[in-house]
Length: 198
Image (cartoon, rainbow, N blue to C red; front, side):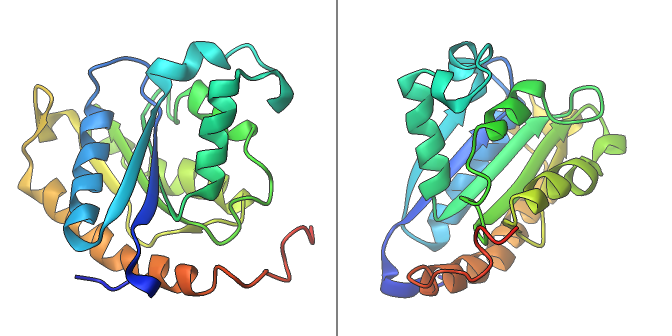
């Protein structure tokens, strides 16, 4: 088990960009959360865009989102670890996924550990993690963890993750990622000199 400073439960918030339920993306998120929980105590909260999408889809500014969406935005900003996941839609994450993060404070994710995940119809979409997710969270100056997780339709049996390869990838992503969360937790009381500098 990876030790985190203070050995307190980690606040893990997952954002699932799927627009329908049930969803293979939600299944992958659950597998990641369960694996993290095997290595450290966590409090988990999952934000399903299929549930809250209608509450912010037409908003142009953060002031216009519903109070329930504002609560979710604050959870994202206050998390110790973010899991962000989306199905591939026309070569990228879903539009609502991006729209939600348009409302997140520009400097609220600085150095925050973020585990990237995605699902798609085939392996040809796997580079979405590198070409779409990492640039977005690079803008926020977040700490995207070294290993992301991508799963294809063939890795599921209906809505159950059955691929041992993907399960091993999830385990590796978590084990490689938790030390970064630990270091971030230790430094959480220090204010970065770069916050707000750009």
